Length: 143
Length: 150
Image 1 (cartoon, rainbow over the protein chains, first blue to last red):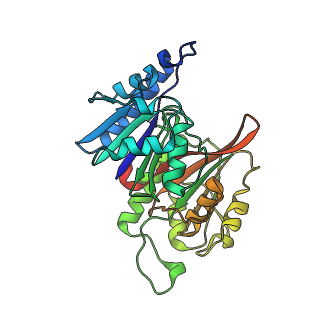
Image 2: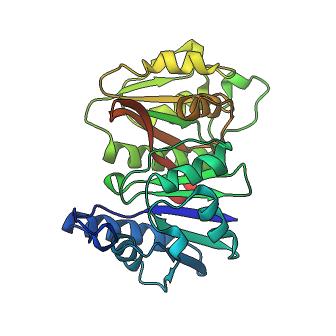
Image 3: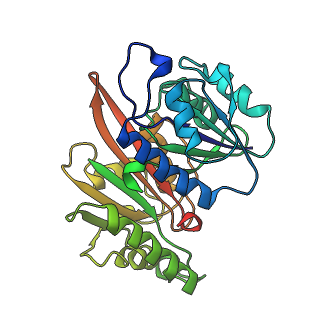
């Protein structure tokens, strides 16, 4: 399995957490990361996104079809994230939140219960069954 | 601080491990990695290499003075790598060029406190930095890049 964890880009504050939109900077981060992803992803891959607007907007930057998965909303457990990915074959890209994604990465890579930091708009590309190998980490600030 | 752990690029076979030289492909890998790093590193950074020729040649691609550290030779323990880097208190960026599984063990220890070793492909590098967030010291993996992704 190849699993790419993508944290939503920089977002505005807002009383309704699910409705928070990307800032202009966040839109730039998402566009830059989407460009990098398009040049490195295979032709076929599955995009799963949290229903939160900031995650949907981040995923939309790829210009591919998006499957919205409610189990990826803020607060998703590491096992929910892994389970969502395992429903699909091939390369799966999950757009979600912190600390959820960092917990899933720690579980898959190190079988650890830990909160690994993932920067806004960054991707972690994991390969293979647990313990997964970290194939790539790319942050928008370093593109 | 910013710490970049860079594994030497592809090298030729040689009876004397310390004298193995980069292959043509390895030189290209080192060049591509160096270009990527030079675009993103601050203007001033410290470059430290294992004394092995393949590591030194990889470091040379950055075109800046190299400090050779004997303790980074193949078989370096995580403590030696972490101390050579001045982690976590050094102010600025340090690039260390070394070997596997040594770098992968140091990375596992730095990021999780675990044993590893984590996979680091030839010519690949990991960029980590430390920060304090909400009173907790954190290690952030900012980039993991291998030559096939450049």
